[in-house]
Length: 172
Image (cartoon, rainbow, N blue to C red; front, side):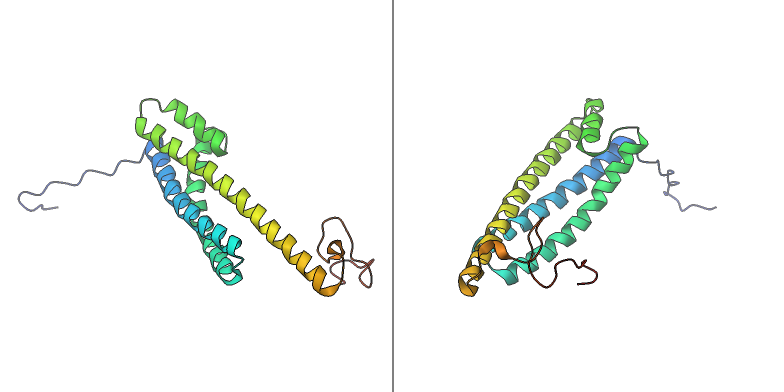
């Protein structure tokens, strides 16, 4: 093969090492979690304002972002498994501990874990707001219909009195 004057042969691509793959996965995860956190903050606002239309839009965006975030998590999980490390944050912590010579890994991993905790807290808060909203709706419906609040159709561990008693969900 003839080369142009001044051109050099391209060096063969070297396969990325585990540390580089980990950093890539964690960095993608950080980006995804930051986006998800912003969406969940919008969800909090929609729940607080009881804005059903905005809540529906926000939940759809949240689901799409979670699917995107799963790609980065899957990449990290596969790497951890290939190295014989446990799954989840435990395996990430183990990888981080072994990478003491790479402060960039430790910095990214600390950010990743901090964001994961923030997401967990925000998710719990939004869940509580959603339950409170449902409770308020049941109470309002109870006042309007004259039924007691606990007489609802969708209650965990209880059957609806009346015509559906004894029927499975498939038959109902």
